[in-house]
Amino acid sequence: MKLPNQYEVPTQSHTRAHAEGSTIHYNVSDVRKETLGANDPDAYIAALVKLSEDYLNSDAWREEAAERTPCEFRPAGSEATGQQIITLSDRTVTFDPRKNWDNQTISKGEALAGSIIFTEPTDTALFISHRVTILDHTIIGGFTQASLLQTADKMMRDIEHIEAGKVAQILSTAPSTESVSVAKPTGKPVEIAEDLIDLLTIHINQTVGTSLADFVVLLPVSLVAVLERAAQRAGVEDIEALIGASVQPYSGTDYGLFLLPKMFTSLSYREGRDGNVWKIEATRNGAHQCWDLEIMTVVDIVANGKVKVKLSADGLQTQAVAFPMITNIKLT
Image 1: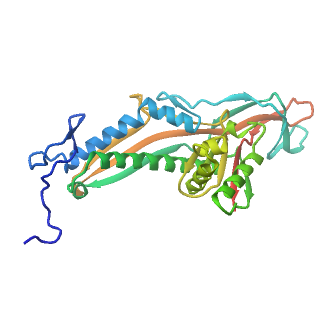
Image 2: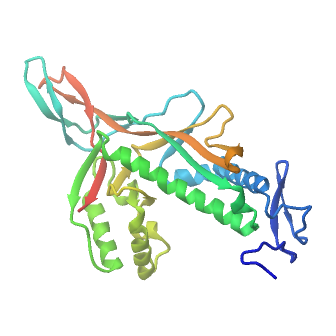
Image 3: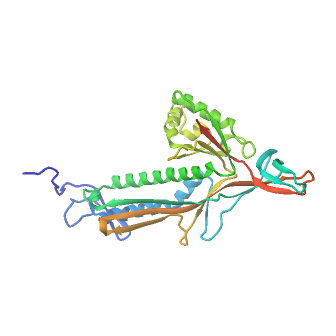
């Protein structure tokens, strides 16, 4: 008599993944007791680590990362590279009160056209660490090539969105971020999308860009489905084609939408001594009969803009102050 939930050894042919050394092989023969590639936790973790390393430390990932947000990949031990770009228009800059030689308190001044704007990393760097525990008993039921690839794809998407959310958190309090509060658009997806595009267009910082194409839009992942539906109704390929700008969704706390100027901001990833940006470690946890998988990297956010303004009429006394170049649109 068969008991409820009784395990039966599978006998039919399936495509199963297992690892031998550093090479992934696929077994299409009948699953037998002596070939446990289909339900071996060690084989599963080896294959998952290899898939993650091959993608995250590949040229393809670097190209995709650069398409989403301006970024650099710098050698181990080097500093993040700041930009120095000439401003094309006059801009009044408000800053913490400073005193000049005449003991006058100055709280705002003009960054004149032709002034040099230079950027520095924010005070807070981002250490990205994603850890997951894979228990043996969740794998012994078996896995397929498709389920392994699906798991890896979901991990990469979660890492992307969580990382972007941490960047949004840092930018929300950065000195060079200007915040504006507006009413949250309502209605059908098309109406919401049109209102959002209008808001983004109205709040373009003309000093660092002249159109939405000059910016990366960092937005909450909750808006993705709405904008995708609007893109379908408009007959365009995707959200970026709809908005006319690069788009990077983020998850976690909703900090609103950010307009990041492509010429003035960037993410600076630190390479290890082996030249890899990402470090993937799998550690056996015998006490709990599981594997601990951790994926890590460190990135600096080059988004603090500085510019020199005059504190005296003769221009002999100047002061470097925070230059507002990132726009944070909070939906209330």
